[in-house]
Length: 100
Image 1 (cartoon, rainbow, N blue to C red):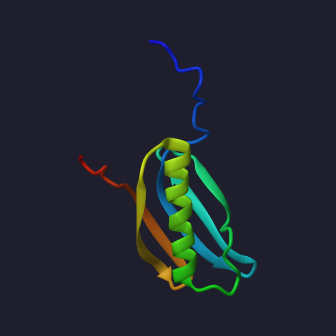
Image 2 (cartoon, one colour):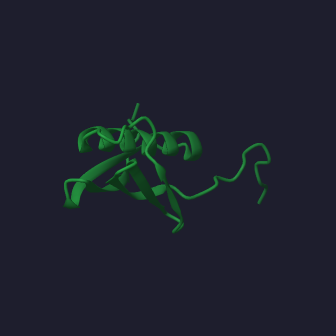
């Protein structure tokens, strides 16, 4: 089987789940990927005083960007509270491609 030399291997698998958590320094995220890796960090463009809805919206944007730009797939996130109003778990799912 021939490899496409023009396309690099993705640095991690497709996002599978995401957790967002409010901390004193701001909102953080941890993404679990399909290959068992973790991608963690500060949630960009969300201030420490932002509410959960803003954090979930930006985290969903981040997951969609990763899916589209790194893996070439459309993704969406279904959220559920993870035990407190400052912690949310998102289950990532592929978005079906529209049929012509």
